[in-house]
Length: 263
Image (tube, rainbow, N blue to C red; front, side, top):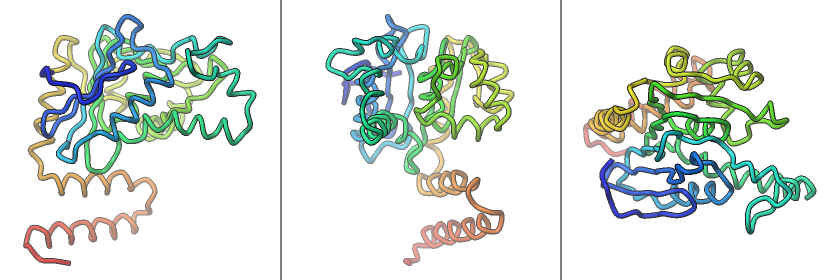
C-alpha cells in the first residue's frame, strides 16, 4: 500500500487515507498483532475519523500474522497497564461488565457501514479476536498461508467481538458450531470453498489483489453500491415478499436520482 501520512497511529493501529480509500493497518508484528482493549479503542477511533470521501476501507496487518488474537496478558491477574484485568471485570456488576464488553465491540462494528465497503487482507494466523476482526469486514481476501481459528470456546469463553453473526451467515450454523467448538484451523482452500473468504492468492500477491478489488468497487456508482449493500445486508431479516418491496423502493430511488427527479 502507498505510504501516506497517518491520520491515526496509536496502540498498534495506523489509519491512512488516500482520497476514496482508507487503510487500517495493525502495526505490532513482533507480537503477531495481538489485541488489547487499547487496540480496540484505537479501531473505534479509526472508524470515527474516516472522512466522508472514503468509499473503501482496507484492513491489513504487518508481519507474517494478521492477528494471533487476544494478548494473553488479559488472562493474568495483572492484566494490561492502566486497564482492569478480566478477573476484575468478572467481579464487577452485570451492568458494568455488559457496558465494558459493548465498548470493546465498538471497534468491530463500523466496518459494515452502508456507506463503505470494507476488505480484510488476511495472511498467516487469524485466531480468536483476529478471526472476528476479519469477519467484521464485508469481504475477505486471504493469502494461501492463512489459518483461521476460533479458540474462545476451548478457553472456556465465547466469541463476543461480533464474530458469531457473520460466521453463521457465511458458512451456516452447523459448520460455524463445529469451527467454534473444535477450535480447529480453517485454511485458505476451505475458507474460499465455504464462502468464508472471497479469494485466496499467494502471500506476496495479497496487497495487489486487494488493490485490484478496491479499484473494481470504486468503479461502481457510489449510491448504487450503497443501495445494493443495504439490500443484501437486510435480506436475511426480511421475508421474500418484504425483500421484493425493499428492492422496488431502492430501485425507485435510483431511477429518480438518475432522472434528476426529486422526491
